[in-house]
Amino acid sequence: MRDVDPQSEEYSEAERMDLDKSIHQVESFLTIILSLIGFHKLTGVDALKTDVNLEKEIIVILATKSCGHAEILRNVPGGDPNEPADGITAAPHTVDDIDTILADIADFTSGSGFQQGIYKLNQKGWAKFDPIYLLHRSIQLKDFEMANANYINYMKVWLSHQNIHYRGYNIDYM
Image 1 (cartoon, rainbow, N blue to C red):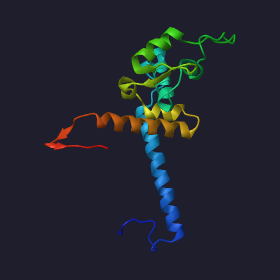
Image 2: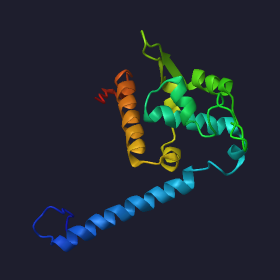
Image 3: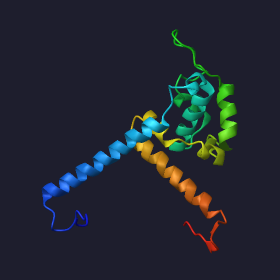
Image 4: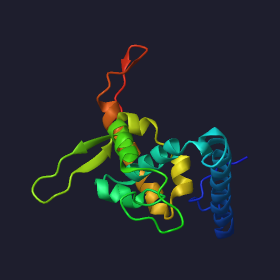
């Protein structure tokens, strides 16, 4: 068996395309497996707990980007509780529900002048971040990629502040 280097001249264009196709198939297969294992939005006990789903929704909103209270209310599924109901269904949550969750999983930074304050996920919020849930919730792939990039940046900063030793060696993550 030879080493797999698609850039080498030994491979024809057709072999490179087959290798690319195989890589994408493996990525898709792994995504499906992870989805089946990790995704339980509408199944089990959590389906009945609207507060658990609301918390997950707020976490993925803030993982994608830091934003103000009004934008969070607009992006939470079920609608803004401050808006009048559409006659069919009312929002299954209240502003107090959202504020309670935000106080637990996010830090608020006050704006100055005319700038609105923003919420950013704190350590507890990032600990509850579920990329598979985000993958199913995202409409655009860029939202998924942005949230994962934000998570990686958060972890780099967090790990740089840790004094981690492994078998006597100081581990530098940056």
